[in-house]
Image (cartoon, rainbow, N blue to C red; front, side):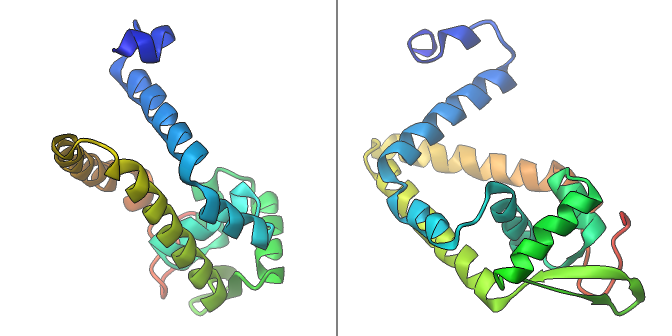
Length: 174
């Protein structure tokens, strides 16, 4: 079946084959079911880096500008510009770090939190529609596999280890 789906990945390492298959799955789901989530993104005029920043802040909590810059793999000046735009859109709040007034902290505003919650709900509903068409046995298999994958990613992803920035402490990366 792989040869029919992604023949160009046939002789590649499993991680590349998985990435290709996952990308194809996401493309199929996005192509058929992404109406509501795309409407939400369009409604706000958000760019992809801005959305990624909001998701990072939603999942990791408030952080320093350095933390966000590292998490986004952007320069500090680009991150500052991105945060300026998010502040203008009332998606985030930028404040002084109470422990080091030279540092700035960024956190989601209630409006930013609401948008991410709505977007996550829309995406969950869209994925649910896509997965509902699969054989129930395959759905159960995927549940087990995805639980393992999510657990492993939570355990091994750098953002979950070294760049955690609790609300009242400075990030180790400035």
